Amino acid sequence: MKLGMIGLGRMGGNMAERLISGGHQIVAYDSDDSAVAALAEKGASAAQSLSDVVSQLDAPRTIWVMVPAGEITENTLNELIEILDAGDTLIDGGNSNYKQSIRRAEDAHQNGIDFLDSGTSGGIWGLSNGYCLTIGGNRQAYERNRPIFQTLAPDDSEGDLYVGPSGSGHYVKMIHNGIEYGLMQAYAEGFELLTAKTEFNLDIAAIAENWTRGSVIRSWLLDLTAIELKKDSSLHSLSSYVDDSGEGRWAVETSVELAVPAPVISAALQMRFRSRQDDPLGGKMLAAMRNGFGGHAVKKSDS
Image 1: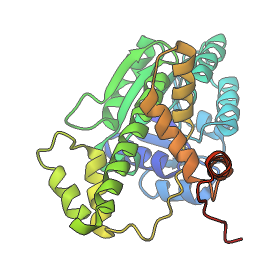
Image 2: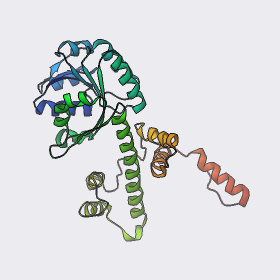
Image 3: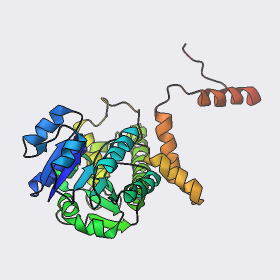
Image 4: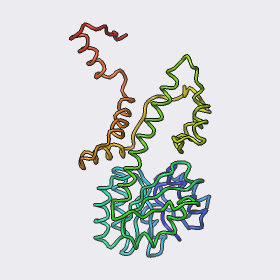
């Protein structure tokens, strides 16, 4: 198949490269000309604009968009909806809010365009390992584009799952990322507890490697943890600042909307917020109250 690929960041570029290696023809566009040139060297056709991508594809067209969630996604999809023809397919593989995907599918439908929202997981390893995809939207559009999804999915698995109507693909990915937050936080707390028992002088890199073989808590996240600890068992080169992509927030907001408790995901998200604070006021307030009601000793600030 021949398709357009919009957004050639680290993940989008790797996905395009996997598609090329799988026999697909790619028309590539990114605001970074060097990213387009790099992919052109691997066999893609370069485009200078969104309209140029569309003009290089024969109808019915398929265009996959991999740009950051937010305004750039909104603007890119809106422009494509205006210039594509009825019968074309537009796929959003980024981390968009599922509610926005439902709206965008309706907007695309007004112009006769099929909109598929594809939750995409695999990170920088997807080029070699393949991507886990959860796809929502019109079932016929999914089937029509399934060769693309099958090429991106891992060779030895059904990683290209159709999950339901518009918005469901990104909804499933949102919950996936919420679970990821909880798993990561549990590993982080566990390894911190291991190092806190200083008299045992535990080798956490060796323990992580040991746990990747046969343990009930083994996982790909643990495999990656073992790799990082093998490089630097103290993680001295890293800051404890942890960002979030937004999907954890949406998962927590959804738990409130649906009145479904999600305490682990919620706590993991809050810990990410805490990681970005330097000497937060909340801690000072706690110290002040303890000092006020009980005369407990407090630690004074150096400044």
